[in-house]
Length: 68
Image (cartoon, one colour):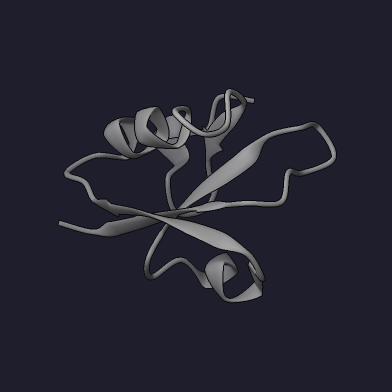
């Protein structure tokens, strides 16, 4: 079960991206919140939305949750 993180800094469209722990792009995220372990990206994004209403899955590591 992978660990997920949400970027504390929003993208230009206002989304806070959710990444798996082994995502290539996570290394470039300076400020992130640990969302814990999740069986799916859907539950990780739901957890991120408790803090950031505009949370979305990373297109690379959580493509099935990338909606925008």
